[in-house]
Image (cartoon, rainbow, N blue to C red; front, side):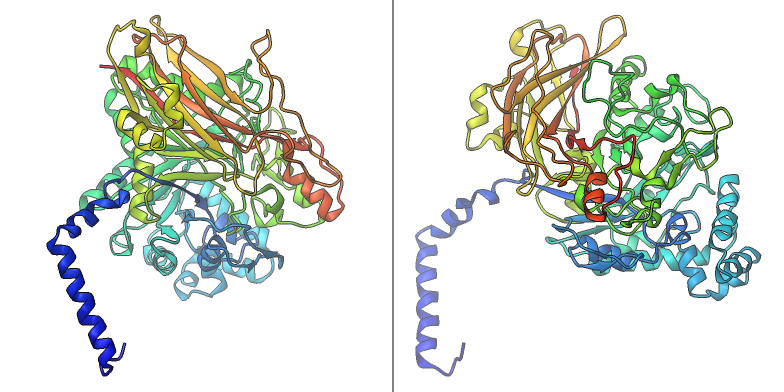
Length: 634
């Protein structure tokens, strides 16, 4: 505006006079209270992201073909087109809202060090040898040279922390560069890769803070300790020394051979209350689904659950120890939640009171959980007509003597998953806080939305309230919360009630059904589970066997297509527990099932004209698992 113009000057003066007049009549106070968001601080949006992505800075990615670093990973997650390590163009249909690059702490940045002829690396005997092997084209020899040291637990670069610091600070600098509050969040993180005996106990560490605090520490590695309790000490020291905040996210336990949710500590000591409280203090959420299979339930533990056998990996771990049936209850999320109730009764604290998320664990720098856009677990499995796309062996890394034919190949990799976070804004602080309070859910790769509130006095009409979300917070708790009931109350009105709403992604598959999964501990100390179908599409009715008929299947394998002519775009339910006993500890979570859609292997066969691999389904039902609500007596 030009102040040389008399008309502009008059407009400015007039506008100011009107504003003063309005304020003198009380309009300023009215305006400050008129807008509802000024009075509401509840989470109002779900954000989708990946908390578990590896770049070339992870040695088990960069040493075997991945040449994309954190810059490319962030650009891809934000929606840009990038060129994959194999030369194929890659782009997401929709950008992610947030990303945690979780490169392995163990010898962080080794592959870039070799590629850059890092002088400090070449001064070491190990660095000189492994660099020479890579330069000579003996890549697999070099990888085995590094992997052998890792499996033995000996750090081949011990005493060279300056190398780690250099590449850690490159990672944190990239996160700062691409973090854009309100549009895209880059959370600082790394992966602690404990694997005693080759059994997976990995955790992703996620910081709430910026580079100024995060740079004061180095990533904690398995060379420092294989024991989760030592990791918790590291996390506690970080918070004490910096005033910052940090948490850890355990991987799905299906490759832990019973160690992830064991009945004793890793040091083989009985769990006590202090251990249980400490575990949940530092590990509030659990990665229940990812590329290495789904970890919600197992058909042998939940034989009446027709949907329990989903993308199941149950033949072993990364080591030579075979999988045995007694290990399974100590590996799967639902069973751990049930056993947590029993520990709570014995110890006065629950070590397995976790919320649930999904993420990819991709080692390609490309977070691709979509069935029709899946770039694989590792670079060797990126899209190609080469049979390695399906046949590349993932586990066990060391063949089992008892069962040398036991293996999982890349065709069995799952295009999964995503972390869904209910928050008010897309910032580090808001997203991290939601994870810490467990107001999160897992999807197996799709962006379906689901919201749950549990209370003691909800009514069916609350689903149709315009303010149902505010009502839910005011009179109940969201997913991840704890609902307290009066002890020994036998009144039916005291039974927990759930309000549930779910919607497909705008470009996604229709919904089949909503299910409430209940777990409880009875008076004798025995745990139970029951699955309730509470809403579904179409005119189906629950049969005499207590089962809801199938939604159907429109998948055309030859065309790699499906139709939304079945299912429903949205589903909602009011549900009241018909068998609640206030004297029993319980939890509830919601599982949302989509209609069948083609698996990624079917899309591959269509695009490349390859033969479908044996042993994997042609259609799957993607799903979401909400964090539970726990019911306790007061």
